[in-house]
Amino acid sequence: MTIDWNKNPLIPAIAQDAENGEMLMLAYMNEEAYQLTLSTGYAHYFSRSRQRLWKKGESSGHTQEVVDVILDCDADTVLLKVKQNGVACHTGRRSCFFTSVSQEKEILEAEVDTASVYGVVDTLYHTIIDRKSADSAKSWTKKLLDDPALLQSKIREEADELATAIAEESDAQVIYEAADLLYHSLVGLASRDITPDRVKQELARRFGTGGITEKESRTK
Image 1 (spheres, one colour):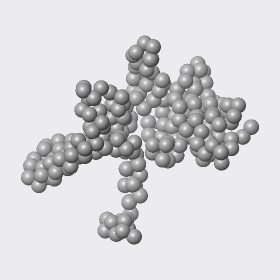
Image 2: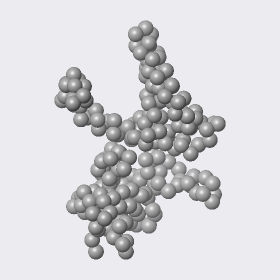
Image 3: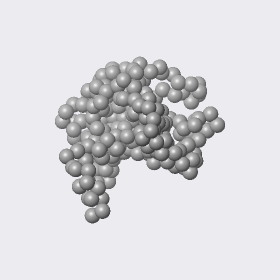
Image 4: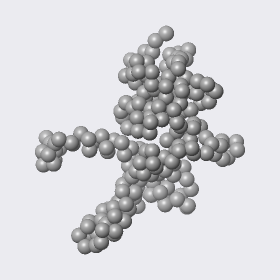
């Protein structure tokens, strides 16, 4: 049985602990990710949000060693039985499945400090994403996400305050205003489901290109 990649260019991939059967996470694979997984013995996926191939654990070191690869009856979903090194979830939990609907609570504790593993920007972005389902009366982030006009005005306001601080105020105030602008910018990215990783990719693309040359290229 083989996967028809023309019919299914992107398929769900479920990672399961090979020893105890615990469901760890759900991601997606394109053909390249699937072939890399088979050839390297480590789980590779295709990120729909970041629009790129990624090896599980490439940033955190929490890799998945593949013990077996199993296709479902329609050959359009893959089950990876893996040895999970570290944790599977970006929240620092062993599994991505940690919220019990029937119990109305989280049933797994975080095992890893995600800020130290992934960086504070990525951790903050994921926290902002989580706020999409929050009560807007209690969450400023949710209020911003629910009100595009408010969000846009805050980004403009914070950008102006940072510019003023750079020109006239102390280093501490510049840092404070930069943090405010970064936070509101991340909320803006989250409102469009654009991850910081895609911004990093764009910055990486510009390395080796002069600023003037890069700006001129936008008008061509």
